[in-house]
Amino acid sequence: MPTQTTPDILSRIIERKRLEVDEARRLRPETHLLEQLDAAPPVRDFIGALRSASDIGLIAEVKKGSPSAGIIRADFDPVQIARTYEQHGASCLSVLTDEHFFHGHLDDLRAVRAAVRIPVLRKDFMIDRYQVLEARAAGADCILLIAECLNDCQMRDLYFYASELGLAALIEVHDVENLDRVLKLDPPLLGINNRDLRTMTTDLDHTIRSAQQVPASTLLVSESGIKTRADIDRVKHGGARAILVGETLMRSPDIGLAVDQLLGRSAV
Image (cartoon, rainbow, N blue to C red; front, side, top):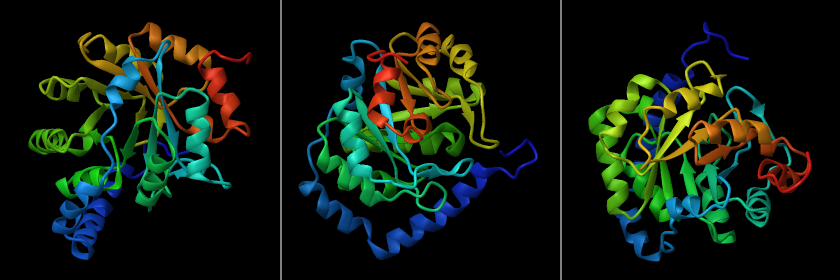
């Protein structure tokens, strides 16, 4: 497990992501992606799906691995996992598309989006309009924007560009000092990441402390570190109206049962 002396993983990810975006743009220019937009499936209502949840909205994550955990699930079948999530009541899905650090791929998102009826988030480290356009062309309904990866101009530009393309944006924050600049956008959807992406340490109470600054009009999503129904009740009581859960579900031998347990539909 990384410690405070571990090199900043987030900086390493962003450095590599810049190179990946440049290479992707070289191989497939924006003009090619723009030509694909007409063939992209209609955008599904990501925020509406979370708001309509009877208990708490669950964004269930399709994730093969992570920098801190390595390979989480060796028998990784993104489509089967996504269908199981949907069958057991997930409101939305999150699909990791970062290849180098999280063992994902944009093809995973394409396959998942074609196989389910619920909205799908592209979870990646978005730093360029190209990635937003890429997400829409691949069928994403929502993108992730990480405040710690973006300055004010970048965040505003990507947020409104996503809106122009019809996409929702889940703006994610870890550092409390970034909340003010995020809330200036008046986002309908905000994620509090309980994991510090620089050190990979997790603190579930981070959601509860941060929620005090989030207006009621913003749907608050608690991300990372949620393992049990008690954890969900804790962040729900603290102000979260949705959760994003990945590793807990991906490690379970019975993913469907794990979703049932988190949503209080089966005895633990």
